[in-house]
Image 1 (spheres, rainbow, N blue to C red):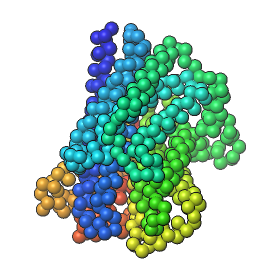
Image 2 (image 1 turned 30 degrees about the vertical axis):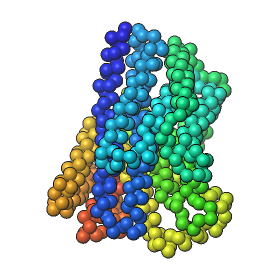
Image 3 (image 1 turned 90 degrees about the horizontal axis):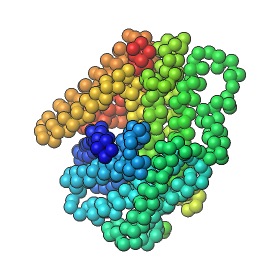
Length: 551
């Protein structure tokens, strides 16, 4: 029995380590490339201080994104093998303990490896220990992982009591963790959590043991088939299905819904868009709370009218906007490409529409969902939180902040950063959708891998041979433009897009890139070329839809 369990654990590690290593490389390489590009743009230091940007970027990127990504990979790898574990002749407590131990070990390995690279590349010997101590944070994240497993298995038999208790407990843990960095209260200064007291260690140990115990009991109930939801939860679940799927709230009464295109849009919206929009609105609500907290934490009473909360709010908003983009493209990723146990994929093949009409209908739904989430993030996440902050502090805050931006000539910079953030949101979502809609996933993964390799080679050559920096950047720009032109020509010759689409996108691209046209600055020229990725999906998505229908 033990040998079978060891073999299963090895199978998890065998399949998990490539993804874990790629994630570590991404979290090390991406900030390295970004900071190298920023180092070239030294003339912008008068407007946005480079040192502050480096500090905030790495601090937020390392602490928040890497931790959540590593936790997600660790949990996903182990949960993916849960069905296989259920068939093993091993006690349930041993299986649950092994899953938790494997996830914690995998997370610690990725976190320690990334921490070592950050110490070598970005920070000095004492920076992380002074601002983000390793021992205390890792202990808390391990505790949070065990609690997350317990909650995950407990919610396999959901009830309102379990849901409220889980949400309250996790929220309390996060508040407790934040309070370790604010010993004088949230209105005071930030003090790193450098030392773990005996009471703090005992608290985390008790919570970890309790989470392990509850998790093993819940896993045993799942394995025995005795885990059932409560009656109240079943009623709420039925009402949620009506809201999310619209099974009984929308009837075919509109004459336009009798057409194939309208029916197609309804089916696709209910199957792949509506739940993503609802999650996006939830993320907008979370962004509202986080931005409101940032307004109060980073503002100082009686200080000069300098909005010191500008950078934190921009980071948080962009972060949650990218989370929403990931949710939307994950929801769309399996809506067209053939997958087992999903009969709706046959409908895409047999629907009486041309490939061009089908791709246009799907793109309209995607744009509708993306625009709703974007508006929610801007109006609720940023506008709503700032308006509430202004109402609490006094409406004079708005005029003083605007005056500060005008005096320092930061209005155009702020608008430019906002436009780039919105374009990157659309670009990431649409390009990943087109990659996942390729008939063969390996082709899309090879495309992404080739772009990463091209980026690594370009950065390495530019650093080792500065003389070749401009030719390498121009070569990369020519490759990107050439691939874009070939994609649009292929889509046009296949009658998937019309001439009007090409002309409109051709006019749109110079208008978007005109602010970055500076051929004496190769980095800005490359940035203007990278913005072409915002229009590339208009060719690749119709091509992917057509290839899927006729594969």
